[in-house]
Length: 138
Image (cartoon, rainbow, N blue to C red):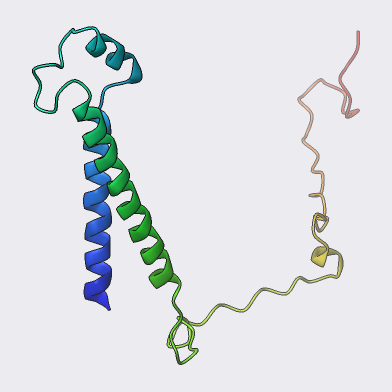
């Protein structure tokens, strides 16, 4: 099974790289107009319009191979074992127990448990300044 998956994955990668190369080599639709009026292309390997047909067909074949390989990898990746066992069934790891909150209000999402405010400590006043706890006014 692993050999089959490796072969399908290699075929998918080679078809993807081939498609990238062929798409980058192809000319745009505007380049065909210039070739029709005799500017370049007539002395090429495939002729004036032969390269477009060959490259387009090869790209379509590689796209079909890529699509089939992708579907095959998705099918094999989703295939379940026949025993019905889970991936985590053979695991020896245990999940930590969730911490239980102290009060019922902490169990409601979006509510915070009120934290008691720290006790206010008084700072001794500087010598010669009355200790009224307020900002002195003139």
